[in-house]
Image (cartoon, rainbow, N blue to C red; front, side, top):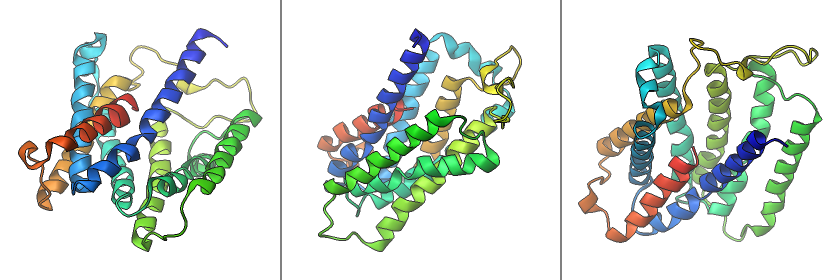
Length: 257
């Protein structure tokens, strides 16, 4: 395994751990009376702020001016769609345990695999399917750690189930809109367009896309929170809550993405 691939795999592991920590930060915040809309508004505001600091403080800051309008529109659209995924999950998490929510939300890998047969790049070879089977088996094994003595409300379960469906669609659309195209599985010599990056090709700069997308998500959640009367002012939030809000914004959002 070369260094680049090893680094990529390590980053995927770090991202997965950071992303999975969201429920651990959210539950204590909910216990203080903070609503899921307030949580998500601050989560993505913090995540977006850190993304812009990372972008403007690094070598990619010049890439902002080079991003075409279509790319910005794609980033905003993906951000708006991601609101559905994140909103349903954290709204359902209010009444569903973190362990059961994790079990249900991680049905999205098989959903992505199915969707790619029609609108994406299908899994090629046996390796990805073996990895998918292992992931699914791990989710099934997690059932043993879930307390089934108290059934959560149906509404909470439906919200949690909606999240992986929306997320699967989001993943396929994100790959499609960022340049991925279907590749014939029968032709091993056909080039992969995702592996090509030439000047002027219009591919999105990842860091710019993340900053724009998280900003769009933050704007939508702040508007929803304001319209529904959820408190957002720092003075209206207990000081003890900020560790959870900063944790979910910095770790579960910025580091994860």
